[in-house]
Image (cartoon, rainbow, N blue to C red):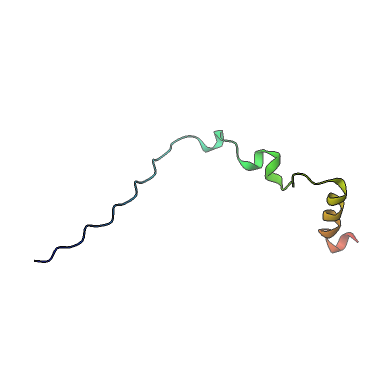
Length: 58
């Protein structure tokens, strides 16, 4: 008779949460969700605008 090694202990399953997800604020509901870069100045903003300008806006 062979002794099988004990199985690995399983991590507990995360609990089910039945809250309404629309009650929670998402990152799109804040200014941070729109790609602002903190600490930039007007010159950096202009450079970014000119670098990312589509070709049809020449």
